[in-house]
Image (cartoon, rainbow, N blue to C red; front, top):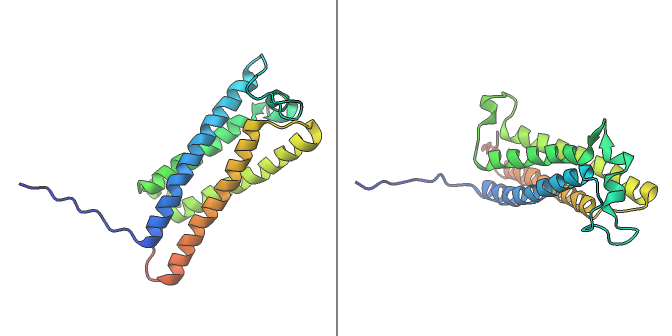
Length: 179
């Protein structure tokens, strides 16, 4: 007896969103690794030689400054939490996990807007930290800058996802692909 598996056909909107989310997952996995490293470096007593590229590029000045903590918690841990949420939410969206079974308001489109909100807060906070690095500490951290670039890319990727879904609704108003 042969077993036949039928995959549900995805619409072009779903395909494009899925493709973007796959890249989003990869990018946020990298961000998780970087925030783990930054957290480790925050607590490490000796200086890191990986990131000492002169007076301007010095992670230890940035990562051990009073600005590297918020409420006594390293900002890298906040980044780790945010990137982990984004990573897991994107995986859940790709695997079509029904989050709304557990939290009624968490339909896929609302989850994407929540992800966008988390990223927007991250962009604002990242902007503040960049200001501190450039104008207060006068030193840059290579890994912090990488985080700042990642969060900027994240916001553009999520805007692309939301824009694609919006365009799909305009093209076919009778189909609710991410309700």
